[in-house]
Length: 311
Image 1 (cartoon, rainbow, N blue to C red):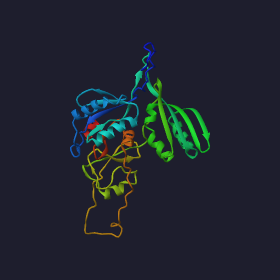
Image 2: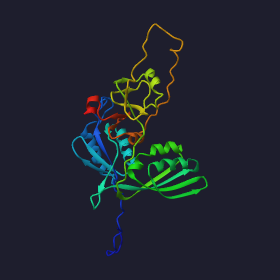
Image 3: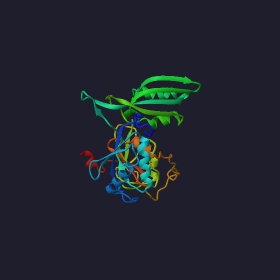
Image 4: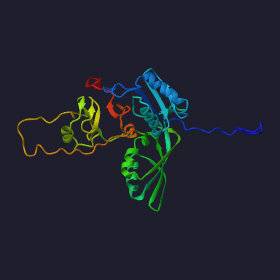
């Protein structure tokens, strides 16, 4: 506080919302780790995070070991900006799924952060949003309708809000406003599924072939295009059933002397769903990594062999 009177009482300090989410930063150890790199080692990543701490007052980092750093931050956009900046500075790394920072109260009970959320959507999409939020057990505190716009206020755990933005965007066709602010810590709520689908995983390390993708694309939207380099245990699209499915997307059509009238038709592939950085961070499960390089964003399993996964 700057003033003329020496006896003037200082103004109360401006409070900053405490970090409610955490994520682990790790050096990239995938089979494609050295293809696009410039700054790859754990020492490079540590120095970059230490430099960020000098100017980013909202960020907190714990250096557990030489190869593992836990970054604490306020929200997805806060950290995705940092990761995107590191990408453009030619850093290469991999990150784990975001986790909520839990605490214990006076009675040693587990508590989690709560958010005050305000949602504005067009009236035509309001019933879709309310139905999805009711399934996720969001607590509505207020609802107002004016003209064609519906405004709703909720109290919701940060853990449930973290996994919903992508679904919310699709349901409302990008016509939405969502704002959240930290409220308080409250008793831990029940578990909720992060997503309703599992993953299809590449079985081979090679380039994807249009022939293989054509026969597999009916199952669900693809994450990769034809002629994209993939490696073993890299996630290439979704699986509707409740298990991970291992497929071979690198198999090409066998060339023989026998021809049929229908075999030489042009293969038409559906446009793939290329994930952005924020979408990938929201999508992954606890047993998956997001591999971030200056040129690519890939989703992979933590364990890259079947034996490691079984162990």
